[in-house]
Image (cartoon, rainbow, N blue to C red; front, side, top):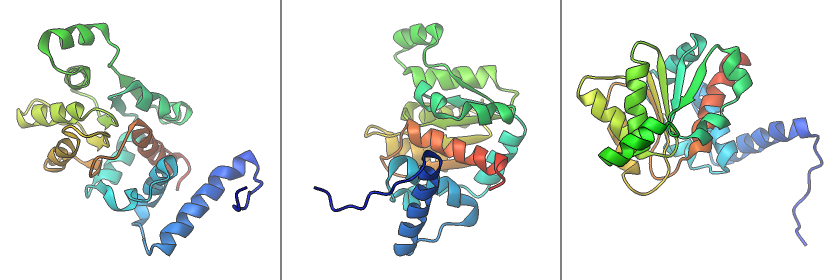
Length: 217
């Protein structure tokens, strides 16, 4: 029998209490998050129950300012998984006049992947660069490091520079290197150093940024 105290909370109070616990534990650890990053990092911790993100989630100097401007202007969001796209709060996205796309299931991209040997994630980024070359774009990667590698490749060739990259793919192969390669550019970024990440983390970051605008947090 567990000796943990069960808290009887109403459904709407559960998230609020979760964030209170996160704040309490961060304080106990002596962690003070920068004000503009606080709710984003806390929402990532909320999505993962992993406090390491307080140390490993890295924001470029203009990342949050850029993200809020893009979302406020009704930007395009391109994800590397349908899971990340489906995790983004659609009601809030629509309220901001933004759209989210994922091209992973596009039949032409799937066929081209078979021919070229490149991943669908990489080819999705290449496709997005062509389709949305004249629009404000936020790239959101939670699963495929090859998506970030393709963005860096296009950047190095002078062919494409997205307005912001959220780079939090999870895994073991090329994951850490892909994140570092984005951090070497002048593209504003939010990146999680190391192997951890995931589509839920990517969506949590986008949601936190949107809520910061809509809820005036």
